[in-house]
Amino acid sequence: MSSLKEKLAQKIEAHRPRTTRLLKEYGNVKVGEVTIAQAIGGMRGVKALVTDVSYLDPYEGIRFRGHTIPETLANLPKPAGKEYPYVEGHIFLLMTGDFPTEAEALEVVEEMKVRRQVPQYVFDVLRAMPRDTHPMTMFSAAVLAMQRESKFKAFYEKGFNKMTAWEPMYEDAMDIMARLPVIAAYIYRMKYKGDTHIAPHPDLDLGGNFAHMMGVPEPYDDLMRLYFILHSDHESGNVSAHTTHLVASALSDAYYSFSAALNGLAGPLHGLANQEVLRWIQGVMDKMGGDEVPSEDEMKKFVWDTLNSGQVIPGYGHAVLRKTDPRYMAQREFCLKHLPDDPIFKYVDRLYNVVPPILKEHGKAKNPWPNVDAQSGVIQWHYGVTEYDFYTVLFGIGRALGVLTNITWDRALGYPIERPKSLTTDMLEEIAGIKD
Ligand code: HAX
Image (cartoon, rainbow, N blue to C red; front, side, top):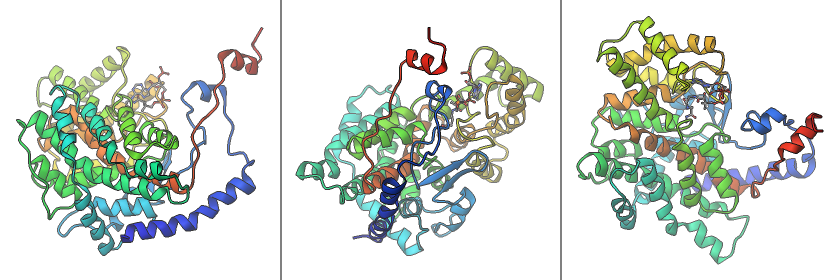
């Protein structure tokens, strides 16, 4: 057994009595109440999910296993000469709650190399799809096509055992995480690079190998290490995380669950926002005439025009956050260091000054500050990945790390099938005391 799996097994053993005790002895203690606004309004703020993988504080932002983004980046082992840590080390942290030693991180690096073999029929499925299919559709279809590989499915068919069900779930989770970068790079090069492909490099870690297969030179490898870590998790109520958890709660395997999550991530209010940000900024650039960064007044007018036409400003606002997303700040730091003179970065920077006061004046968005998607596409564009409908696929590779860890733990702690209760409008009117 690998050090990661062994440590995970120990952590699970230690954790199980905590969940059992809460359920058995304190199951009736209330954690909150639900209002009519929450029932109609997307369950915002309803505390009805449990995860220890990450926690999102509205004012502080995400903590992975209790650690802020700067703490996470500082404490994870890094490849020699690189600025950002091994993604594989982050997987170790998310799974176990402990920072790995360098040797432990390197063990996961080697393990992922073995797991990253994608069956040929997955490429055949992709090749059979019309070339103008959206890359997220291809990505989700590839994950679903691989479902026949599921070790959890085989385990279930042999006879389900609640105590050991996390093991095949873990195996599937790790296989999927290892294969996603290979599938994504294949989709990218098939669609946009003349169907020419670059084989995985045996010496490279997940981030480095992804950059290699994409055909993008340094420091794109470091950027993608940062990117995948930043996008890995945002607690468990967001659409992609919740979908993974919900589908897995029916004892569907990780392939079914994560393919469904990708379909949610593909929505413009969720992961597709990074594509929309670029599309929108380029609309601004076209209107303003090329690379010249417009004045604040010109920019303000464009923002107001967007709002007045009934559209949202992509990359701004958040369902939980109430300040600038620290994931935006981490990427901004990268931009300030590596691409301070990039014309689109200058646009993004100007928008950072212009949009929040306008959203405040507009008075609708509860959070006028930028989220992760406001910055991420710009960096991709800078390094030549200009096909912005591909950006959500990148988000999907990162998001897999957290949500697949989450469902491994769901199985370990024996979480049941999810089944909230619904009410009718008549019932709500009765509760509100306005029913005739
Ligand atoms: N521009 C204009 N209006 C906005 C807005 C924005 N960026 N953000 C919120 N609003 C509006 C909402 O549309 C809503 O209007 P209505 O009352 O007319 O429906 C109102 O403000 C209240 O919304 P909210 O409570 O502040 O925000 P929600 O929790 O409902 O939605 C969203 C959160 C992220 C979906 C929202 O802020 C949004 O649409 N932002 C733009 C799209 C975006 O950037 N999405 C990516 C978010 C990060 C992410 O999940 N990435 O995957």
